[in-house]
Image (tube, rainbow, N blue to C red; front, side):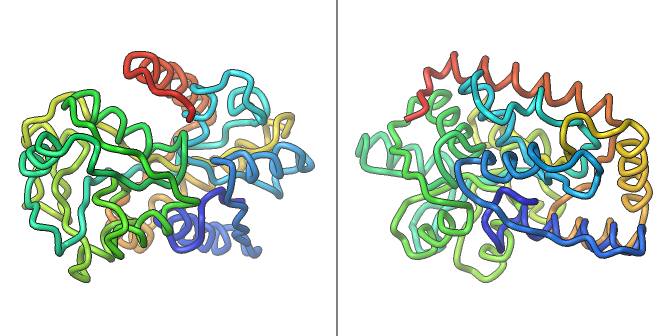
Length: 289
């Protein structure tokens, strides 16, 4: 079960991963989309499913951000699921419409300073990674940029392509097809290093903006109470398929890197992510609009 809209980077990665699991188990692994309410709709389906390993949640950092915003969020990413494995990670990009006469982060900031509150950015919705990175960018730079939430990554990018908004912060897999088609222009990578797929695009730090670093991660969760032996079996499958050269190559073509872990290591990551984002939300004064 995937909590993101069809066609985006999350959905594409999930389907590629599901095909490899199908090959591994010699049984069909079907991807079902349940977008909406952040990751809660998809999470609700999985948290209430039988704890038999047959229904899994393909989740992202949105789930930890949701809990960081609202400790009473249900389902609770730390309590209502059995962590299986981290699956992959990818970088985020700051992108604008290719027809916009802005070619760098500093040019963008100059436009913002010249017209405070006039620029805006689209996201996949309130309390998403796109939202949080945008708010963090504004906090670090002092830019007055308005948040425009949409219902999913694809609508948010479509709005940018149509020039209904000025910019967005999105995953490299989601942005790459639009950048390669000449519809969007990447200004910076929100990471520590440049992307090998876009070596000419600087990092935020290289663009003069420190402290705006965020990766997108994808992980797999089972319903709480799933027997340990089932969790371990699926986690082992994730590690095995991650070694397949064709899988690695297909992910790399989208700007994604396989990053399988043990269930315990993924559980540690989830706790760390909730704590990290809670600190960012508090420091930046972000509200769940």
